Image (cartoon, rainbow, N blue to C red; front, top):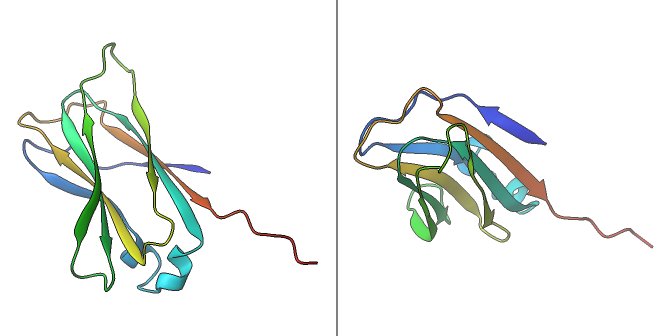
Length: 122
C-alpha cells in the first residue's frame, strides 16, 4: 500500500524526517524486522537529498544510504521511486535534506513499506 504524506514544504537547507520506524513502531525493533523495503516517491521542484539512517537504540543514527534528488525535467513529474533496503535494520529513518531553495506548492511525499514474504508452514 502506498501512503501519501502531507507535509509542509521544506524551507531552504531544512531537514525533514519523513519516516521514523522507532516512532511508528513504538520503539519495538521486532516490528521493523518484518519490513524489507521502503520506497519513496516525491513531487518536488527543487534539489535535495534523501537519506536512510539506521540505529540500534533509536537515539544514535548513522547514514547508511544517500540519494541525490534532482529537479524533475517536466512540471508535475515525480522523483523516484527511491527504493531503500531496510531489512535487518533494528530502527531506521528516511529523511529529506532540502537544497538552498524552498520547495514549492507541489511538494508531496508518497511512501510504501514492504514486508517480507513469509514462508508457508509445512
